[in-house]
Length: 127
Image 1 (spheres, rainbow, N blue to C red):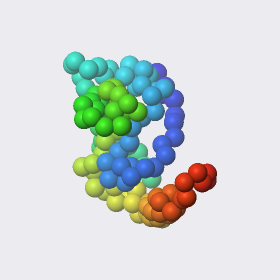
Image 2: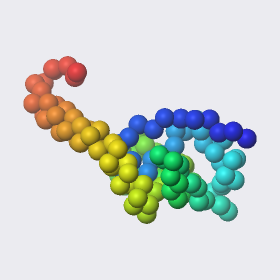
Image 3: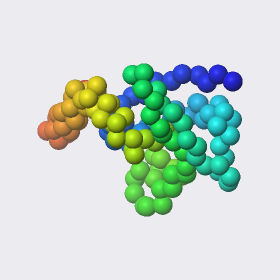
Image 4: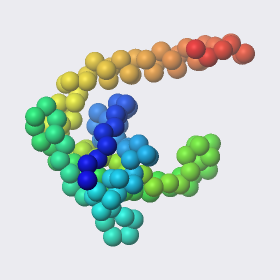
């Protein structure tokens, strides 16, 4: 069985922890790695990046938003698949070195957008 490729948009956790796999790939990955909620929730995988191999895990976890706040309605309790490499410091260093400029732009852009949204007048359109 050949897995379908997908793209990951680097977010904050990409540079120190890992990423969440897009939902449309869950079924294929669960079959391929034989993951389920009761018996096998995670397995070791290998990430090949820049012709080097790094160890990582694919985890089948449940996110439970039991706290009472607005996000609970937006993100209900759900099962997710995640790639996790938070203990692989060589990979994290390599990602930070390669995408460091993107990471700093991401931080600066968020600061700019948050500052812009704070200065908006009531009724002003978002850009």
